[in-house]
Image (cartoon, rainbow, N blue to C red; front, top):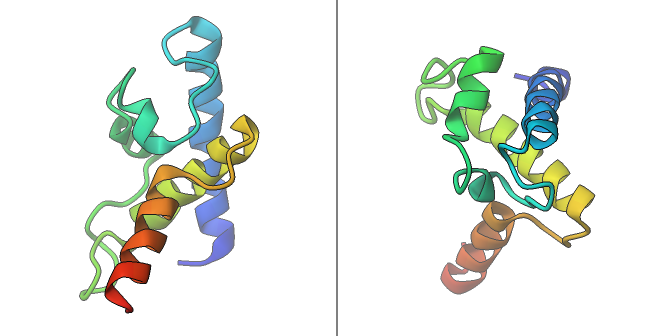
Length: 100
């Protein structure tokens, strides 16, 4: 799994999100992958794009799909003018609390 692969899947997903925004299915103000779930089953984007599920490294079987969804989240947050996406903020806060 490399950055080019993550970006390729993220590009496909962002194109589909933009189509759903244009169709009125998803709010144009959505700023995170988590917010997409308010409008659609956001995981369907990853499945539609063909992101492999559960086939990555044995210790983290969903590493690729998680990286792709974090990249989509980052792009949505950036487009909405947010400083970071929900998942990134949650992960940062968790690390700060646990000291890990």
